Length: 297
Length: 301
Image (cartoon, rainbow over all chains, first blue to last red; front, side, top):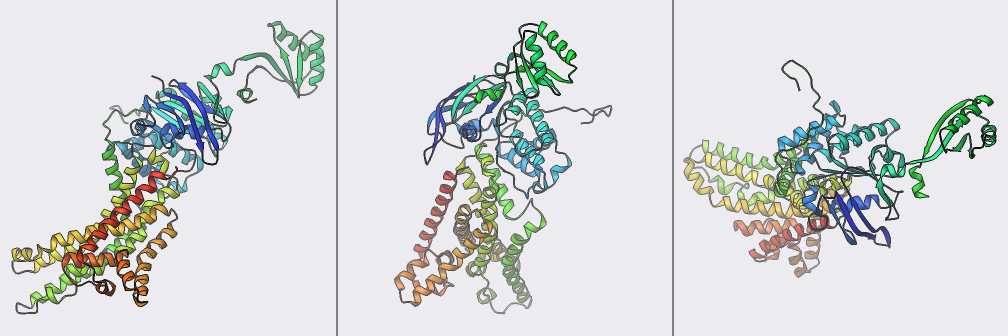
């Protein structure tokens, strides 16, 4: 059974803003990245999948439930972490997550146990007895993730989970998302406008732009090797490029980096010799991969 | 978890295979949480101050009445029948506690309805098994139950006091019995009308201070309009307005239920039939429920 299917899904807001434009998708369980610029329609898609928003036309199913007719049935098994602030500052994390567990259908004692469990899982320990108003952004994002996990959903929909986090907080949140998807077998859809993040956590990628599907494929196919070697030197890249051209290689210079077209392994030797002969400080040699950025060009 | 050898194991994440309750039980859980929150239970001490303070204030006349009755009965038989002489009776209590209940609504309804809107919590509710209508009804029902408790509590004190003060508890009970359904009826109408009006305003006014002011306004401005229109010799208008003024409407309903004289001069002057107050209260409650439902069915989250 596919995790999510949509067919001709369209959402128009009043004032002729089209957020989704005939989106047709079929996604299998896994960690799925939903990527697009701000305003591409990512949040709109997630909210339609949750039944928070009605589509203008088209149909969508989640875990086999029709979004339009069986919203309550599917929401039992879905966890949602919205992009915006959604936490009452005068409540403690424990109380809040417990209440959200109860409202997801857990009996009272189970809700308390699960709240303690998921808060520990997201890395909140003693702090969970303090009021959320005093939390840092990173801690709030963790509470938001915890409330989405409290009822042990089969599918997590995360909308920009690293919003507002510093680099260390980003790394931790991405690691949590990755663990949740791989270790617990919960399917995850992560919406983000940051391609670098998607690249790090997802197996499958859906790129949308202006409400239309751009690409949907396993991540690997986006980032195959390009057959170019990037050689970065401290200075005098033009001299290196000249030497390599003289040795019969095809090169282009990009700042301090010389891009060498690879045909076989002998070219590595040619690069090594040229750098050694010129006595250049070599910073790195790396096989170039297609960046996800290429998608949007 | 500590094992037999005292080792600590990290069990990692565990799924949940236990029972899950249905939509109705979820809505009841929210109703219960709303009822508790309206008395500040589960919050800090400061949150309890206003609801419990108002609750005690509302009980005070009943406690006084019972105490005085007990003192008088100590003086022996043959004394004046206090039940008749006292101004604090089942049929007069609505007038005594109406203001306190209105203040309770003005203080607590914005907390119950506005908080989730202000802090953006609604998407989290609506993305769970709870429906939008369930949420609206659970919140309004919780507030109404809280108001009902506030309204019925003094009647319970009066009844218990009368039974205990009577020479024979059974006689006391027999004397009180007719007032039990009447007290229940006026408390239900109190809860429906006052929680309904406060709920509608709070649901449509997320900002707390505005909502509180608007609720107080809705309770105190209409009587002024009624008085003015009566003064300006628009008698017909004043009579109709009595039915849309929460305080007067309940005063009239109270007089209708107990067969007593209304408190408010405007109600007395209007001279409307008893059933009109009960009908207007029922229509008003239905309208309030519909407006709260409409708010949450349409709100964008």
